[in-house]
Image 1: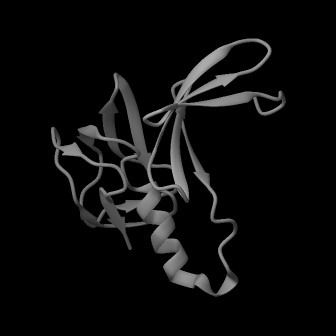
Image 2 (image 1 turned 90 degrees about the horizontal axis):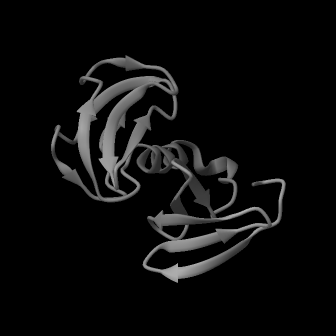
Length: 136
């Protein structure tokens, strides 16, 4: 898809039609305008329109990046929690599995760290943009 030009049509309510010469697909978007979560073909993408963080952003930039990476991209149900407080995790480790719209949405560690807080429970309905896990 990235190699081919495509047309994107806003269908309203966070839905978009993505068309190229070969096919049409439906994409769903959620989250704040500066960092939209986009669901297309069973995959989740984050579109960050803020541009690169300034060099002086330091820890504040990392905290914001963590908040987005460790939050649900849309209303979802917590299917499973794979970490405990104090556990050391590596970048890419599965932390929480969510379920929404008949899709599994894995929340993975954006960086190496240690789990400071788990803010959700299995079976809980979570909202977009709210951090589910905090890392130290």
